[in-house]
Amino acid sequence: MALYSEKVMDHFRNPRNVGVIEDADGVGEVGNAKCGDIMKMYLKIDDDVITDVKFETFGCGSAIASSSMATELIKGKPVSEARQLTNQAVVEALDGLPAHKLHCSVLAQEAIEAALTDYEQKKEKS
Amino acid sequence: MIYADNAATTKMSEGAIATMVSTINETYGNPSSLYEFGQKAKEVLENAREVVAAQIGAEPREILFTSGGSEADNQAILSAAKLGEKDGKKHIISTAFEHHAVLHTLEKLKKEGFEITLLDVHENGIVLPEEVDAAIREDTCLVTIMYANNEIGTIQPIKEIGAVCRRKKVLFHTDAVQAIGHVKIDVNEQNIDMLSASAHKFHGPKGVGFLYAKKGIRLSNLIEGGAQERGKRAGTENVPGIAATATALQEVVADIDKNREHLVPIRDKIIAGLKEIPHSALNGDAERRLPSNINFCFEGIEGESLLLLLDDKGIAASSGSACTSGSLDPSHVLLAIGRVHDVAHGSLRLSLGEDVTDEDADYIIKSVKEVVEYLRGFSPVWRNLVAGKIPFIL
Ligand SMILES: Cc1ncc(COP(=O)(O)O)c(C=O)c1O
Image (cartoon, rainbow over the protein chains, first blue to last red):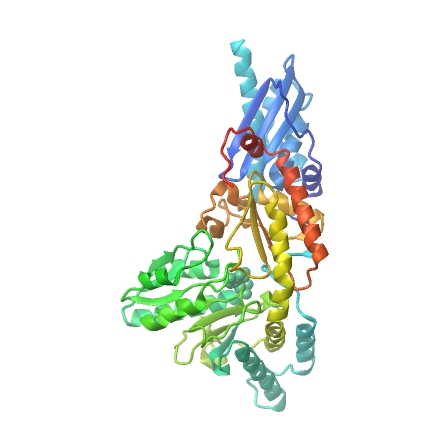
């Protein structure tokens, strides 16, 4: 019996959208090193549509896979739709996570939310 | 495939398997039965006891077979506690980095009114005999300190600690689950009153272990029932498992020197190789450690992803990260030697098998370097460290 689903292992081994966007329109970071998980999301947004997204993650296999899957789920989507992303959707797209790893999907959802909030705050200021 | 998790469990030796199979086939009687079938099994059992006892300088009657290391730890500690309680002594000394089989038993006793002192294991993972001495009180009934740590492999000054306990007339138990078969043990010469061992850590079967208890120490039962094991552990004996345990132990003890000579240079080569990784650190004393044990922390990465990627490269290892321990905290052993959470999550334990080769060492070093570099490549923590936004710890 494998620890993770094929999907999780695929996203862990070949994470999509890894990296940094230097001139990102929104950046969100959640978690802390003390707990062993940190996720950072970078968004490029044009006309309220997410045109590019990148992530960096310090964490376990499911944290990396959850970040990767979450970026795929929001890439090319309008901001309003990305706001609706739930951790459940991330879990389902990954064909499930072990119960004690569900918090990784929550973290991914929160990282995106934080990046979107950052984008909206920046937009208000300008 | 390189199996480098021998501290978790080992492969059974061919000799142990052969003994187990022949015992299952030929000696299936119940040792408590009086007819020939039973008496043959009894003979196998008592022969195994003699062999096991001889490997640690004990007498056969001082060996009690159990279901493993955990049971032996539980029985040793609970027995000493009961003896202490009778004399109004309810203080026990141990260390912060014991196996949970010891720590959880001590926690249980704490709820029953015992006072527990957990000694510091210092940055190098070694207990000081003089600190044991200083911690012993009038009401101390037991000192229990592991022989070698299961995560960082550090070997304790057992003989010296035992001498302190003898002088102060306090019972001394050691969990030798990780040490036996790697280090020469003589219970009399090393002043040990009680000792726990587990067969699956020395190429014997899982689910078998033993407790050595010096003659005259009254053990309490964990399991009540029949009169097996001098009445101290009920239940029909696992004769095939016990016979295989004796074979495995005899083999490893005979090879201690040979294995050490083979393993130490390979261990030290891997340690030197991994030290080349920037911002990494060896956990535990570099010399006073098991010949098979390597334990590192790598800053800026998390242990579980490290293990999964090493698994993809055909290397089986373990980590003390929270994600692999199934709790929110990283390994209590790494915290006990002063590693902070941030770096304790990025730990790697390699516990080598005796068949490891020099080429394996090269492959391990190369693979770990690659994986650490890869994971750091998209770690936000590493980015912040490199950018100087947070200070390096290692
Ligand atoms: C130091 C130590 N003590 C006790 C045990 C428990 O042994 P067993 O698995 O035989 O119960 C282990 C095994 O993980 C160990 O490493």
